[in-house]
Image 1 (spheres, rainbow, N blue to C red):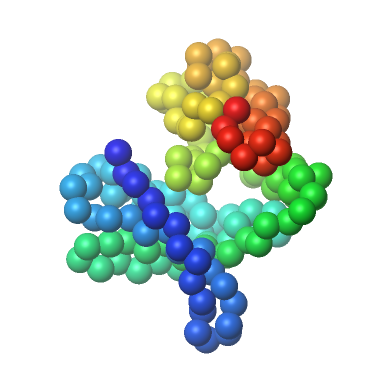
Image 2: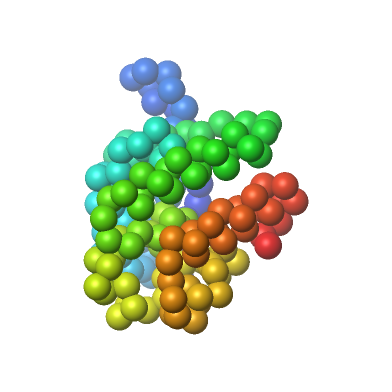
Length: 158
């Protein structure tokens, strides 16, 4: 299992805060590292105001650091969800069948291939049809958004 540690950092060039996901490279297999690099490539190609922006990455002997836009907490759940839904619309417009996900496990699959891959995602937020791989559709993402609302309101996973 790959474990990410999240840090809040400061970009010394412009004074902006950034989020830094740190991955220990100790005991990580090449296959897991390749998957992480694929996720980085996915993030590099997404450009929408409601999707966290990829800013860069760096790799040392012991760690991989993924630098992302830092997002402050906002007080209204409605504001969050409206923005999430705008991002979801953008992702669906990209072609194929795109599943909104924790970007630690995100991927874009051609529509023809959607039912030929293993289940990918974080189970707490996955619609039953995604887990069962039966009849996955755009509404499956709405289930995940609903689970996100529950977590924001209660501070625990659904």
